Image 1 (cartoon, rainbow, N blue to C red):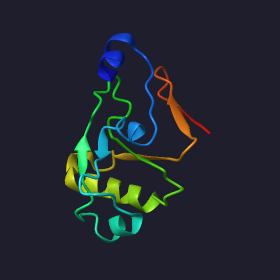
Image 2: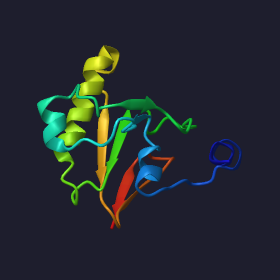
Image 3: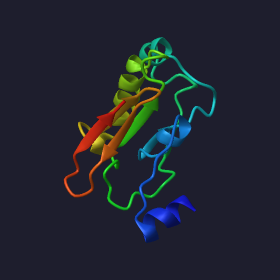
Length: 123
């Protein structure tokens, strides 16, 4: 349903927590449980560092080289997001220097203008 709305009706999409995470091309899947910043920084190949590729096919490729992490400040995830980026760039050498991370907290949103590719942080 979401993919159909993106492809055929050009509707804006949004989400909170996991619903926000899945909007990036790279997704921290937490298939083996969550990891903390300390755990991710000490060993970016620990069993909890699991990733998946896109859940939503992005019509405009704006978030094509992006991974999103939520609850960013409240759960102290800055180090974790850096480990995500470093790990992805190591595992996918062709993307070296291209992977971007977006850390977003509760009561916060970012909006992207499709005409300018500029984003605005709200909240």
